[in-house]
Length: 199
Length: 206
Image (cartoon, rainbow over all chains, first blue to last red; front, top):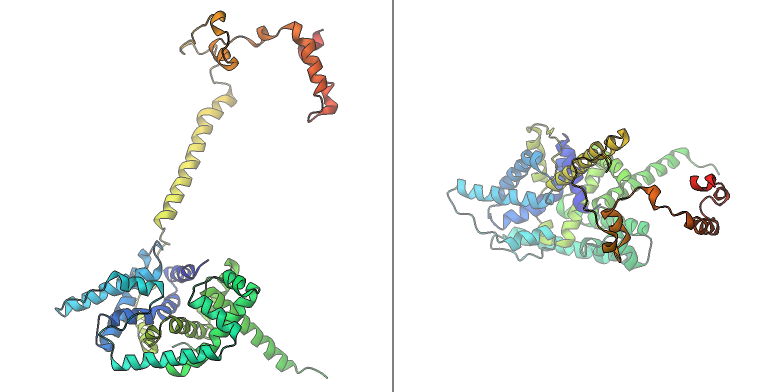
């Protein structure tokens, strides 16, 4: 099983009538979709409107989703088309989104250059997140730090991490879990996420 | 000293919650086996506790990969979409088959159909004894008869194919002692004890 399969399991749940499962997909991809849209749309209020419309369109189209591509690839296409429609409705031409942008986003390796649409607010927020993440990472014990970095940044499987760290897979699982908890704790005040509570 | 039952229960509940959360973390990475996955999904979709953790850890992943992406976090947007979803109908779509899976299923079906066809066309007539024997096949084109002189040096199978002869005429009585000796020598087969009882009809006649 892969991370993509985890998405697919949620998709199947939605297709079987579970709306909550779609909310979990929204929670996972809301930031990436907003980031993508922020490169096309300047007004933050418009970004939220278009993002919401894109997610609702995706929900309506989900019965036709066959799982041939990753869910996020499919979702990104819907988001881009929704943004284009947004511009068309306003009688404006959508800025070109080059494929590499989409690939960067999909790969999750997006060390994206900030586009012209970055506002002082978003720059500031981004900088604050960077500071908080770096602080959280520095405070982690070395074994937790290595495990979470190998997983989230390098995309290694638990087996590969276990081999690299010379420890059992169960230990890797525990370390990644504890690292996530520690970093989430550090980010909570900044991002308004609350412990053990949904939005 | 007696352990406090309340604190013991709390401790057990905490451990259980931690195990659940750890499993959720593994599931998010696609590292949970199928039976455990079902349980985690059920708990995730029914409990706010795990949903909060799921959301936080998604932010953590985004923040580690890109500060700009994490900075887009908007609980307000999630709440808006959640409210908008309430007005949407519940989906009850049949599971869409991927074309790859569809191809696989079609191929499996074709293989089953082919196997049934073989049974019907070949095996059933054989079992019923309705398959025409070579001698009965009156409409078949007769194999050309080849003179023995022409056959010198040819492969035995080819000879048999060209000049089918009754099995009885193949046997040469002068070779029987040779075959008998050979059979005795190689009697250590799958049924060595029964080998001595295995005699051809021809031998019993002698």
